Image (cartoon, rainbow, N blue to C red; front, side, top):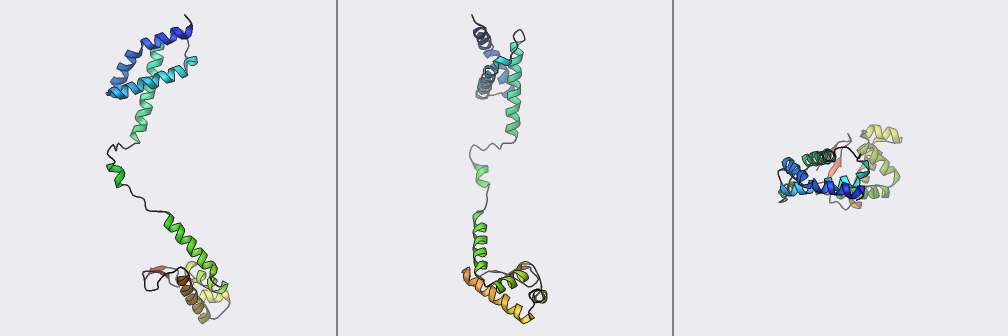
Length: 179
């Protein structure tokens, strides 16, 4: 009889005691069977690491115990939800709506005349006052107000937004305000 056959027969002879130990850990027949099966797979895969002349039973029990505790740690992070009740309470809003809105806004901003886009960004996005934006652009206060107003109106048209609907507008302070 070869060494592998002798090792195999000794392992097979220990299956009932491995199953009893697995059941004492898991208290469930199906889980115990799965644990023994995984232990045998690991033992067979690593049989070259077993040192002949040492205690095979202790080696197998150590593999089984470590496997059990690894599974136990994984289960702690899991939520048992056989019926799907917990999963049905989880909600995640659609994320693509925001990216679509941002792309639409970027495309609409790109269609604005450069001076209007610049004025709108300075006042609405950067938060500059009309006076500060006028100083940056080197033009009169009335010109900046006109450019921002025209840019807002064209942006609303380009984005196909009805001015009377609930729209977010930007005040000269840079704060977003709902209308």
